[in-house]
Structure formats: C-alpha cells, structure tokens
Length: 280
Image (cartoon, rainbow, N blue to C red; front, side, top):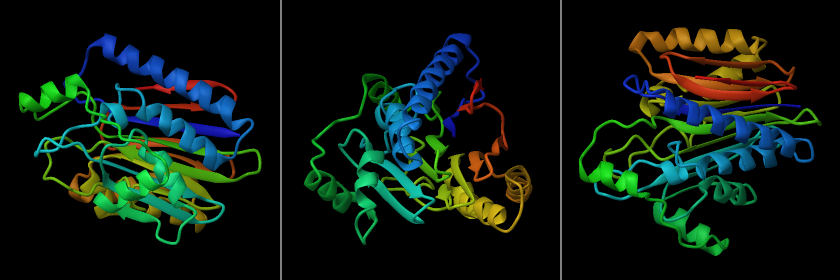
C-alpha cells in the first residue's frame, strides 16, 4: 500500500519559514491520516478522503483556500478517476459547496459524469450537499486589494495504491485567482488527473500548460506502454520545455513505484509507503 499527496506550489516570493513549516506540518498530518485510512479502505475511497482533508485546510488552494475569480465569485473544480473501473468524474466551476471531490465521487455512479456550473450545483444539492460559502476573510481581502499573486498557487491531489493493487487519483483546485469567470483549468480533465490499472497521476501548476501537454493521460499512457513511471514523467516534462510549461506531478505505478517531479521549484508533496516523506 502506498500513497502520495501534493499541495500545489509555493510562489517564488514565498520564503518565510513559518508558512513553509505550517504546510509541512499539514501535509505530514494529512498523509498520516490518509495512510491509516488506506489500511482499511480502497484506493478510490482513500484519494477522496485525502483530498477532502486538503480541501478543508485553508493553507492550500482548494476548498477553503480557493482563489476568487475576477467577478468576485469563487468557483471550484475537481475530478476523480478509478484505475480499476476506468471511470472518470469531474466538476467544473461549481459554487457554494465545501468538498467538490466528494460530489465528484457521487458522479461516478452516473452515465453523465462531468458536470459544470449550474448543473453541477443542482446535482450536488440533489445528493444532499448543503450550501457552503468557502470564501475565507483572507481571500476576500486579497480580492478587494486586487492582489495578482498569492502564496497558495496550484491545486491539491492524491494518488493511492491499495492492498488489492488498485490505483486511484483525485485532484481539486480553487483556480488561479482573478481569472476570467468560468475559466476551465486542467483539474477536472484527464490532462490533470488520470489513472488506470498501470499508474495514477495528479497534476498541479498552470492549467493551460497541463492541458496543452495532455500531461496526466500522456504519462499514464507511457507507463501502460512499458515506460517506468520515472521515465514516463521525465520524457513528458522534457516535452513541456518546448513552451516553458509550468507543472508538477505526483504518481504511483502498479508496481509500487512512487515518483514526483516539477518544471519549477517549490511544489509541496508528501508520501507514505512505510516511512513518511515530506518535501518542498
């Protein structure tokens, strides 16, 4: 059993040790809880659990830490993929829910498994997800002062390999902040979140770059075709250099290989495969 999570990127201007320590401690706590959960649950259940914890932590840009778009509204996106069943589900620009990854989990049982906007919200309400305003005072203040950059860049995600050898991946984001309303990121697409029986990948970074590279699906396809996880990631990141793509990934293969890489420094991640590792 193995698990890895990420908490997006630090901005390059973020150097204070207090914030770094807080993120390290948060990732340590979440990966520990999630690995314990994995001991008695499937990979699919575990990635939903882990990403829910990340969404509930305002240190990270998902759920409670999400960025506000240019019209003053907060819209969330998330996706989930079960490597065993090969089913993908996602929400694009949903509003007023606490944990979009949990709504994505409900969508797996339906034929129409990627919803956006009002349709996504209607589905969430039908499934019993109550109104929740995820805008925290800090985010509102940042918006009001028109800050173009923040210390919580990217997304959150999790990939898990369970005791049965099954893989799953989940990714959630609050966007990049001050974007055109209803911009679509990579997080609710197979470019940003993908898994099959061979590997699972969750991405963070600039959504447009990740979509342009079809990054998660490309890496998993290469592993399926015989690449090691490391070689699949490294080759895909070489291709990002053509347009200076900004991305980071975490992944696990069916053989138990764990790997992470990024094109720019300061992606934060944690993994557990018998021993804890936390890095930024």
